[in-house]
Length: 225
Image 1 (cartoon, rainbow, N blue to C red):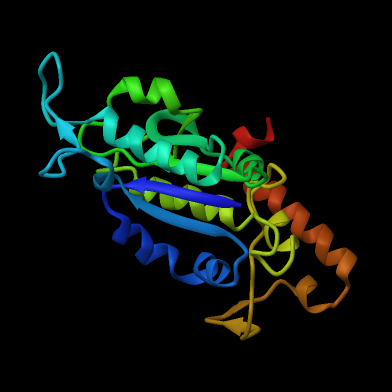
Image 2 (cartoon, rainbow, N blue to C red):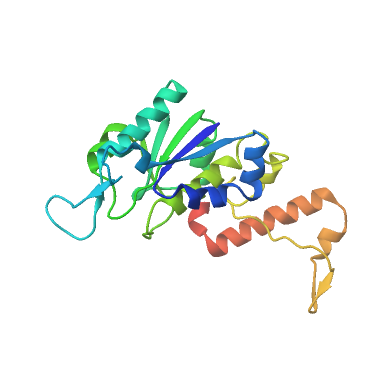
């Protein structure tokens, strides 16, 4: 899988993408993630990529041409159209199921907006879907793009040591994850649930499933529907 991130702040993205699981997966060649500076694709001598909005209003709007030129460069390099995503609070909320579907694609281009957003015409021309990471607004699309990349990347084959690393996590099967415990056995007067000390795998699995159902009922009953 290859993921390209089109952004005004590639250094910000690289700082995150070079660490932890995704960083190690990139170094090992398990996943190909790279960032492109949108300013490199403008013809403006001052490298401007934004302008004032038609109709008036606060802020600036990112122009079509630099984003489109970046998109075309990606298309030329990979020899096909990448599945193109625009990070936007107007998009559908990211879910584990959608991330799993995206992890099976070969090429993804994520576009990060900034300022007041992106000229709608380039969205209409090249974007396949808009994705939101929640019902709130951030300064730019970089943090949402990093969330999406991490969410997709860890589901790609070989990135985690075993599929069980994500199949037992929250949301994968529609439930929130069961609680975890480690040493010491008793901390601040609180003991580890006895079933986890028995070594009886079937009983432990049943307990964990019951805990997942109960936690989901309490915190996210909408998921059970």
